[in-house]
Length: 190
Image (cartoon, rainbow, N blue to C red):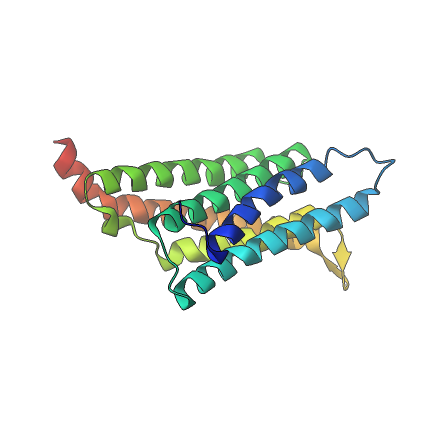
């Protein structure tokens, strides 16, 4: 397993997941709800920024690797799924929306694994729909974690709207990837 700065940042993102989740298990006597929510939102934003930064560094420094390409999306999915479960527990996100997003992540991960196994991974390469979906999630989730007013803007409302946009993009991108993979699936399954 190669260790370089981009992979270290990806591992750091994975290590931040228990921090974000753990904040919500601290007693209210230790930390106020508003401080807890702010810390969780900031930690999520830092983790999300490392996602962009580690990819940029890997390409810039020519440190891309098969392991990094595997670990990076796993870290993203773990981070999003953990945050959605916390938000679901706090009643800040709808169960149906969480199910759509988490279900899609599992489905597309399995699809990509299958397509790689049959030598057709190019048909499910990352598309701009997937990137838009990720961007909507990465903005919606910290808004929902923060759950407060910021500069006169109700971040909870912004998060509510963006998570619905993310859910729509989630379904749309899943259908896109399934449609792209369908010919290879039909050929290999038959």
